[in-house]
Image 1 (cartoon, rainbow, N blue to C red):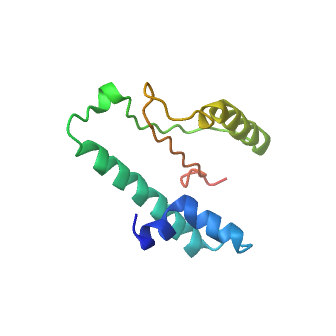
Image 2 (cartoon, helix red, strand yellow):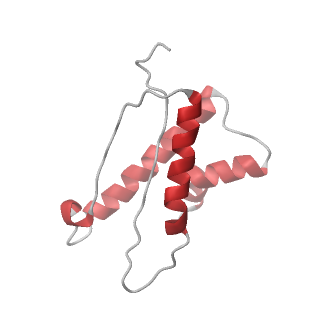
Length: 115
């Protein structure tokens, strides 16, 4: 991974900001982080589909978007449930029978919602 990739990777960017005591708050910083995140997704997908034998259907590749109507408490509950569901899988170590898989999430308010 090149130095710019290491710095611009969305997770590393957040770690660097957190280490400096900053959060992504300004609209330009948010857009830069989002652009980096989406760019990383596109890069990963591009490398995957160009790999010999790539088969999205067999490999379980999917894209989903759902519009949810939640109050703040329900949204926080959803986030905590997702974290609890994924947490045990994050602890799993590489093994001959396992394949590395990327699970990416992006959550934002629906820009079409005036509320």
